Length: 230
Image (cartoon, rainbow, N blue to C red; front, side, top):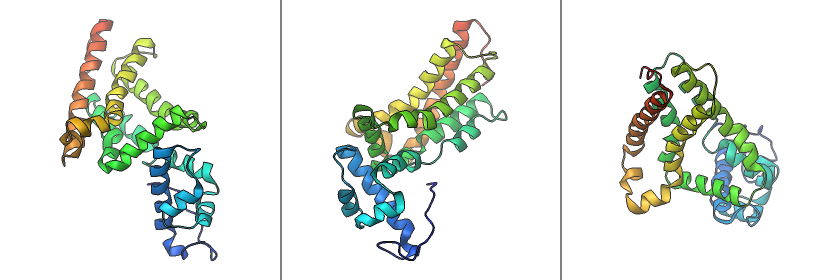
């Protein structure tokens, strides 16, 4: 998990400098659980520190305040999206390879199980009880991969520019991944092996890649152009 770690300090609370990364990680995990369950307003720094087996001063040391800790959950929980964007956007990849790369990156965090479910609950909480973080999240983690996906599809469909039809296609493809994220609790209730089996994520990547290619072929047919090489 990429993170900017604070410089070791002799007066760091709770632990020597060498123990700082585990303490910071515990705070992030505790905050994710509590913010997802109770929302931002109803979660106190004291409750987070207690759940993380740390003292309140540790939150100030590693994050500064509650708002910064909350923001860190969105930016750090499953890493930076830019490496994934660079990977699936590569012109060296076929469309099939690019889609497999895209879905592989989008779904890999599901292997974290309950933590991934807490993460989607956190996002739902933020949308229902907005703090302003969702707008920042859209700009930082949603817009960039979406625009890269649009450019990728335009390239493979030989389109000079985006249009509403291409945007619909891009949203439909990204929606394939998002519906797995958003239906985790339903999947666990109705068909748990679809998430819990050892090869569950890879099976989803394989199937969603095939579904995405079918959507691209359908878009080409709607436009009356030759389907792209897969």
